[in-house]
Length: 243
Ligand SMILES: O=C(O)c1cc(C(=O)O)c2c(n1)C(=O)C(=O)c1cc(C(=O)O)[nH]c1-2
Image 1 (spheres, rainbow, N blue to C red):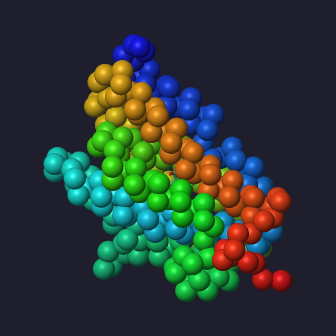
Image 2 (cartoon, rainbow, N blue to C red; image 1 turned 90 degrees about the horizontal axis):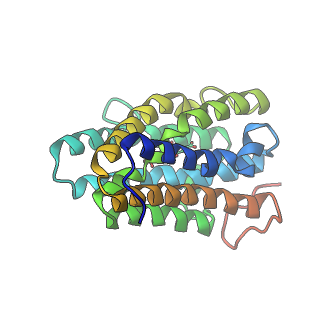
């Protein structure tokens, strides 16, 4: 059996895992960020990622729904506002739609989710079910990919603004707001798992959770690559670019 790690050793293991498996390493992202994607590929990415964005509040609400600690509930509640917005502030989902609008995708096509790749739907639903069904520790740990997202978001904004003339700061407004929220959320979750994973089994569960979550994100990009880059096999019913 593996020994109990110190909290800092656990953090190092998580960071090593992210360095090896986070979706910044995926060839589809490398294309997207370096200006090598066609507009059709950018559209397919934004349309599919919309589903991830739209389901995040459901997984966050399910975590709140079974959490007995009011401090954790209050912390987590902010995430719902970040994505859903308030009466006076639009949330992240609304800002994601500025991206799909800017790419010329009809709102109904995006929000109906009828043109998703099947793998996008399966991967995102696997994430939602994981958070519903696993322990609270694993549910919290499943957002730890956010430790690595500020870096990829800044690479993405810089790359997309530099390389695609149809991308503007307005269409990328989702990403401008996200890094400070991600840093706050990741910091909270990392501190939580370092304090609450107190046995080797619990620490292994946290590590396995981060692996699972990296796999969710990776498989979404694999599906995009397979359908829209190579070999270019678009599943029946999925988004077909115009022209
Ligand atoms: O653009 C990205 O690469 C990226 C990655 C991730 C992530 O690592 O899960 C999230 C987001 N963005 C994001 O925008 C977001 O709202 C978000 C919420 C969560 C989560 O697991 O609760 N991850 C992510």
